[in-house]
Image 1 (tube, rainbow, N blue to C red):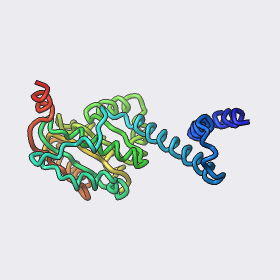
Image 2 (cartoon, helix red, strand yellow):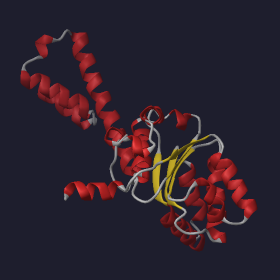
Image 3 (cartoon, helix red, strand yellow):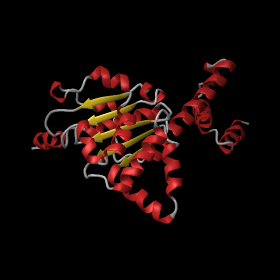
Length: 245
């Protein structure tokens, strides 16, 4: 009977319940539970399994460039990174409020790592996240305009709770990319959050975007109700290289 029950659980894709049931039977610990406790244990196991699968699926769909986490962030005083601020952002209330996070600093100081770590936290909290290298995103959307899939690609971006625009401002925007950025920002204004990382200070973004009227429209929406983090210090990559040496 137990084997038949376990098989039915697996066929119904109750994998968490199936594993917990088999473990309890094989360990002979079923007598340790009352009937209510045993049912509760099975339900909890199934809930945990589905929750973890949902997080894993969300992280996969986000297409992060690499793995990072809040616990590994270096809060050395020279980095101008306040631990309490980051831990508060990691609770992802900024997503619920449709707020943005703008992370600036010189090459290698950990902007992308921090932005990605906050993206991972959002996935864990159940939000839909997409990571983009900004230059590659603009190139992809420019091709989408040519093959007729542009609106479909924009709709995919719009459905995300959080998008990460990594390495924004490495090159000035042309007229096509300028309009694309405006459309993305307009779609997300009061309807989603954006995490931007950039080597260029925020005040320099006007020059990167170009066309004052469009730059004003973009930055007014992007900067309004945003959290601004300006990282300082030496390159973290350089430090790791020194430590290895």
